[in-house]
Length: 407
Image (tube, rainbow, N blue to C red; front, side, top):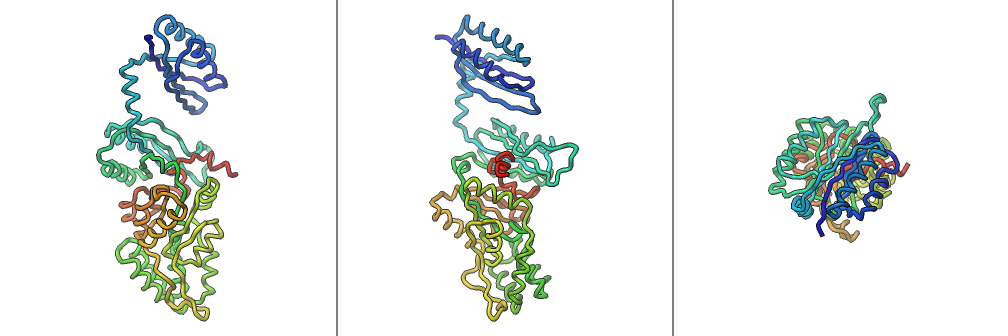
């Protein structure tokens, strides 16, 4: 039996009953829907339907009736005949590799999107869909926390992923935008564990620097901390040096520092949402358990692994108890948590800012350098530098309406 294939494109003001009215016409002629998709921007509808129908009188009649129905509904209908060869080629593309590109910033400009999509086009990849993940922005009211994100689903064969992502890194630096690239795998849609560095990630300070200020050795300790975070000196070596400088500090200081920790913008929104959707969360920190447990209670974190201060007679000894939690140890804890939860490492997410986070960032299924040092950004899978910690949610594909369900 000979058949015809048509692509029906509908545009016009959105209103109830459009899809129902059009598909009812197709149903009268026993048409087979091969594909369907819809987008709605500012109450303006763009609807596409590809359908197959018996050639001859039915084919001509259904087009006429669809035009009448479109006129009745006050919309514009356009038909494009599709050859069987073109249709089969289109079907063959569904086996191609799929990827997700997420663009984030306080605001998104046409130039930023243009440069990203230009790279996609140059590599011969197809964009299957584009979704806005953030709510609509007022042009009159000033936003307290401006943020914008769109997600592109792309398909095709990438011969050199590293060169592809390097182009995005260059665009990110030049145009002040975050561009995340992920393979669209089963693991991406089924992640279960998110692990955070603490200092300069969940909180906007380095606790050891805060303690050093109160011990009168602030500048000395800050210099060592910065060198360690930049990856210039070994973390364990830097940790021991800084701990010795804290010897004699009263433990009463710890409570005051904890109660004044500056929580990173978006942290509570992120963790509340993660828990709402069933994720487990963990702190894997080169900082201290005292502050990790304080944040655990305040933010409802599930697990904490950090360094334990040694205290005698109410004062810090300059020592510590147990192994130092450095970059290797963080990666070990990530693997341990995944094993204990019975999940694949591809189902994990790690977020951090320092050189001692790189091992866990590159081990996790999704590693995110958050407002990170240049060396960390250049060596991590993805980075967020333009908005708060809740930007992680957009990399997971959540729309603001998914997040606002909790309110």
